Image (tube, rainbow, N blue to C red; front, side, top):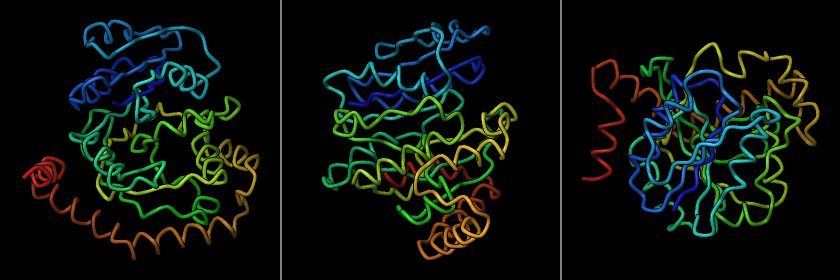
Length: 275
């Protein structure tokens, strides 16, 4: 079963998509914990309207997004096998949990798996596929976070070790700090070359609120992460080279062509996977 942690604050207009995307995965025993930071909008009403057996909604003051995720992680039950973090303005794509389960069964030595993602706008309209290459320590420490958190899943052992905790002092690059730390501790990352989630692009995101300089300042506090202009340029170039060599760029081009041809690439891939 899956345990999904969702931090939320005044994102009621997006929350239904997140809730339904977990429920519709159809994995028995899965749990979706929404940790709300005392929202003043209709978030609680939305959660109540979309209530299902595995859903919980808890509203209390927190220290920000990282703290909210940690509080939701703290509710992991004994039977949970896989754990993930889904922001309330994101949502999973059909069959994502099946893809992750099958991957972990095929690859018993992998502790963390991440997939591709799609970008949608505030209304959920498809913008593009963001495909990625396999894990690279060098790219992570130079280019930065190329791994989409909403498409990332952890085995239970990462949680049991106490290592699956975000540092509340990080407000924007908490994911980069987590991935660098987990890699340093020896956990093995794997990659699924299919989109598993949707990342919503809108002006109220944390990245848009804090700005690029805030992220740069936080990066400078992560051990072994290169923050200089030259190193980041080298990282960006290396990232693009790996995207080309891994076929990620071709996947992106194919998805965009299919979308422009009025063919839903997600539905088509889902049908092909289950044929």
